[in-house]
Length: 91
Image (cartoon, rainbow, N blue to C red; front, side, top):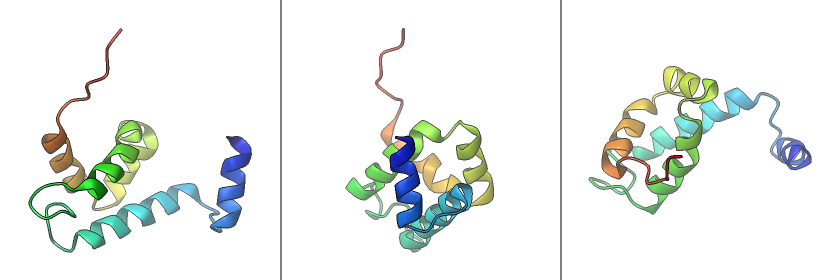
């Protein structure tokens, strides 16, 4: 995975991973165009896909920073409410 990440960074000209994450979050919020979800009043598959990528990192340092430094926090909170708790089994 290390080499995959290096190749992707080179391919997409990413020099600062954190800033790339912030830019992607801002792009997503801009795409919402004032709507609650990209699907309108309910999440659609695109909302679920982005939420699925962000959920695992939300409470890591990079995820906390992303919510703090971008406008994605409100959308993420609405998605948490719409999707509900994780159904993963707890040990």
